Image 1 (tube, rainbow, N blue to C red):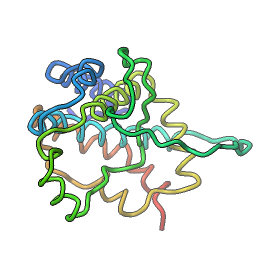
Image 2: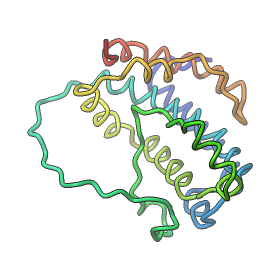
Image 3: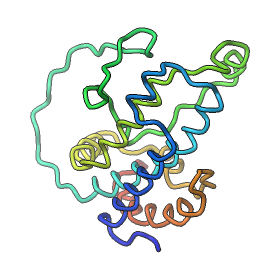
Image 4: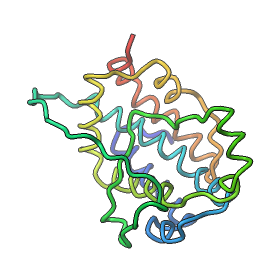
Length: 205
């Protein structure tokens, strides 16, 4: 059955997260490994990519229902870039991590030249586990309390709407190859239907 309300959809999403947790290591244990083999990374991404997409659809639907009040602009200092686990210690408890969920962004695509270079290096077979663990932890936090993420997304989209490319990527009728298979395929149309009004409100052009 397709989710008919946002509450139903979030319940379905949390169920999918529990299914992933039965197969994929919890974030702290995954990060403690530091590295994963290519096939292990692929298995994790089979869960992560569709779950991130479902979360973005739900947050978009939540954002459309938010009425924003004017706020004073905040002063921000220069941003410090923090890279992979090889350059920083990782707290043992994932609740202590600083993670972010990119609610309005799709996965970045590497250039063909970068992909060819990666295949010729150590990175072709071994990957940093910490970014994967951080993405899982971010999804868990979104599921536990989506409201602040939806509010931040609404503020961002009021200033910088979704591009057509972002919207097409988010709403494309994809073949979701996941360990759950059919349950994801049945859930996606319902999630997209919930987010469709938000697309018309927030998409640019």
